[in-house]
Length: 419
Ligand SMILES: NC(=O)C1=CN([C@@H]2O[C@H](COP(=O)(O)OP(=O)(O)OC[C@H]3O[C@@H](n4cnc5c(N)ncnc54)[C@H](OP(=O)(O)O)[C@@H]3O)[C@@H](O)[C@H]2O)C=CC1
Ligand SMILES: O=C(O)CCC(=O)C(=O)O
Image (tube, rainbow, N blue to C red; front, side, top):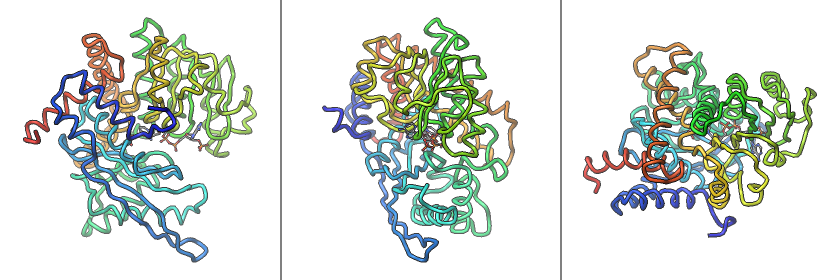
């Protein structure tokens, strides 16, 4: 299979097939998990500020609900495709499986460049998307959350729209997670994915006989996941030597000031033009910087056969979903690089979304430190299970994570009589 022809859904199916073969699972398990249960494609008419109407295409994919309601973010991006959303929904099922959440996987996406829309147009698009997918979502059925280019504000509009459609006079906060704290959100959800990426980097460093405090770390992508991954890497004592976004890569071999960068991006939107102590490089140069740990936190297929040979890191913690192509992965594994797979490394987001959902359903809210402690327990426990499976089965970490996830998914499917 040539790297160019690989699409994310084919990669997800390949990862599943390899893991089912390694486990010796019945064919039915692969069959049931290799295709999503439901794929909804919608057309969303949006009244633009200039009075014209534009049509946008969106998707909601529900992959597998054997373990519980489905769960997964909503992406607004011009590069969204149906197969990308199918892949992201598939990965959500395994992510929930590996960390033991009572959820199946789902994902949503709209083909749009949100930077070209005004705030009001974005609100109308968000509400229109919810009206279109409302028949198949719900707090006990499928619970969306933020992903690339969506955030707490997007979720608040969506809850408002969904509640007016379905709430019959009630607000339904548990129908979406990743909401602002002031509107039913969970403390530490905003930080959760990046925090988890670094918790896993810390555990992997220990596993390899290293200490995160001695590590130089590079982070690709400086949005929700990347910025908090960089911030926690620094607060855990690592030196964050490089970060990047679409505009550029910033590099300082002695370490960047991540908090200052976060403040800069808050007002300036991108990293470019930052005048603190560092060099501004082309964004692709992040792959070649001298570092010990690398966290890809942007989009799929970031680490490819084109850039993998330049990479210096010994541990990769996949903040993004699907950031490493199979060809690049093969090269990294041959070179003894430990790859903490996306379904484990970035599971902090959905873990804390689960906590948010539980709190919404009970209308009882936890402290920031309580949430982070519970997240840490779940992620470290999953890390232990995955490394045990690695050792017992002599497989790499991604395959081991799939083995753990498939085992936990096969049982409810079997008990429900699906095979
Ligand atoms: N949000 C969450 O809780 C979770 C997210 N994820 C995954 O993490 C990844 C990032 O999501 P999130 O942080 O929420 O999204 P955001 O939209 O907040 O941030 C995405 C970041 O990636 C940057 N980016 C995009 N393309 C490139 C590129 N080619 N090179 C460098 N940077 C690039 C963007 O730059 P710019 O701003 O300049 O466009 C932005 O900084 C996605 O794969 C998502 O699916 C996984 C689990 C949970
Ligand atoms: O928080 C969630 O429910 C889902 C997050 C997500 O989309 C992901 O983990 O990729």
